Structures are given as structure tokens and as C-alpha cells.
Image 1 (cartoon, chains in turn orange, red):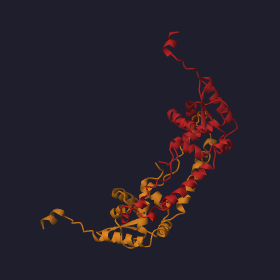
Image 2 (cartoon, each protein chain N blue to C red):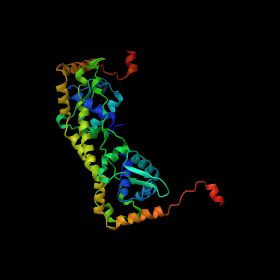
Image 3 (tube, helix red, strand yellow):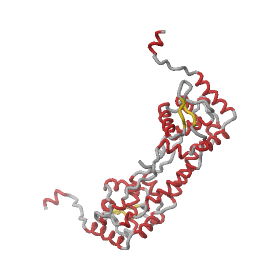
Image 4 (cartoon, chains in turn yellow, red):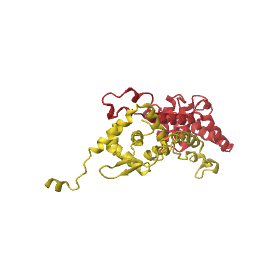
Length: 180
Length: 180
């Protein structure tokens, strides 16, 4: 198992697909289908991204999700934190104060400053978060654009447009609708 | 919850206590008592560190654990990997190949090179592992030495020596022993 869950991967792929969506919202279900991932899982992940202000939801039959801000302002770190929560690399339980030599009251030196073990972990965490903060959604989208053939963007747009066009408004009262 | 488990913290504290142990092995039980941690948890962690060649076990009534090599050759990364396993930051499921536009056979460009999302994660993982690899057990022990008063080392040695001296050989046949 990896440190980051599959939700991060799903969320990043959904966001990548929203970069070129233009003004037409894409639904969670369509985004999931386009990535070959579970719609329920995608819905949960998109809800977290909405809460973090990374995507915004548009209601209605043509509703769905749009990026809430420009992809060059959305770092991979912001996406990871939105989905996983601000999870530390290491949780220090201040074991250094539990030594039986100290008795009931640990001396001041034992808890002065950050525990030396914790300090190493904080340095490693900073390095990891720095690397994630240095890349944006726009950077990844740019790489995909350079890799994919020119028609991929247009084909993607057509696929989503067809999905949107095929949607029917939900009837608000099914029993009444059936009676008419 | 943190990315690294409490076992890493326990293991690191146990190893720190072995740095100045000299030639006298310290038992898992004594090491656990000295840190105020669970002896069962410490035993499991020390077994992993032994398997990774970081500590070695000495048998017998005066038995226990010793560092298997010099603390300046034991990186924090080696300790983390020994305890947690070589856990990646991110597991790529190659979602990029699942797009419904590709049909049954994804085109070569879709899986060429490393997925751009995975590449960002690999960069972050490298930064984190690099930071953990740049610090050794000797570095942390040095910081503790500079922080602790001069008598702490001697008091620690006395505490472990007394624990070792108080040990009694286990009787191999308790019922026979009771009869004599």
C-alpha cells in the first residue's frame, strides 16, 4: 500500500479532464466514466475538492463540475491536502519525556525544542510538500498536451458534449408523470 | 493519522538507546520500559530491525540487542524502510490508459513514459527519501548528547546495568525446580 490513497489519483485525473472543459460543466458520473473509475468514489473525491475551493458545482440538468480557479494556481499539494486532509508524515508522541530516570517530572532539557527525531521527519515532510507545491495542475496538463495528438482534445470535448446532450431532465414526481 | 506509524517512533527511540550501550546487549523489555512503550510493540519492531541487519540479537540470560553496525552508517531512511517496508508515496494504476476514447487498445502515446501525475509523485518521494537518507542515527544521537546533561549517559548505563544484574536464568523445568 502507498502513503497516498487511490482517491488522490482519481481526483487528479478528474481535475486534468476539467482543465480544457471550457464553460460547460462535466458531471461526476461522466468524469468517472471517462477515467474508468468508480462513480461513487469520484463523487466523494469531487465533493472534497469542492469543499477546498478547487472545483465548483453547477446545478441543473446540464450541471456538473468546473475548475473554481485557474489551473496554474492549483498546486498538486493543494489537491493532495484537499483529498487526504493535512496529514503529517510523522506524529511525535514525546516519548523522550517518558524515561523512568526522570520520575514524575521530566527535566526541562528533555522537552526543550523539537525532539531530534521529529526534526528529521519535519525536514523530510517539508521536502516532500515543497516538491508537491512546486507543480501545478497546469504543469501536468501541459505535459499531457505535449504528449497527446492534436485531435485528442477535440475528441474529448465531443465525447463530453454528446454525454451532456443525451441527458434528460429528471421528472420531479414519477408517479404523476406515469399517470399522464 | 500520520503517514508513518508509531512503530517508526518506537524503533528510532530504541535504536538511540542502543548507540551508547557498549558491548552489553539491552533487552527488548528493558528498552521498552526505558521509553515507556509497549514491550510487545517494541519486540515486533526490534525483530524487523534485526531482519534488516540494523540490530543483532544476543542470546542468553544477559542477552538482548546491540547495534549491528556503526550508527553513522545507519540512515533514518534505512530504519523507516526496515520498519514500514519500502512503501511508495503513490501507486499509479495507469488510469491514463482507461479512457473510453481508446476502445480496447490504448494508443502507444497514452502509456509512453511515466504518467505525468506519477512523475510529480516520484519527485516528491525522492525529495522525502533524500531528506531521510541524509540523516543518520549518529546525527540524532549527537544532538541528544548536546542537549542532555553530562550525567544522563552514566545514569542510563547504570539503569540498564541494574536491570541486567537483576535478571535470573530461567529454569528449564519449573515443576522439577519446585520439587527441589
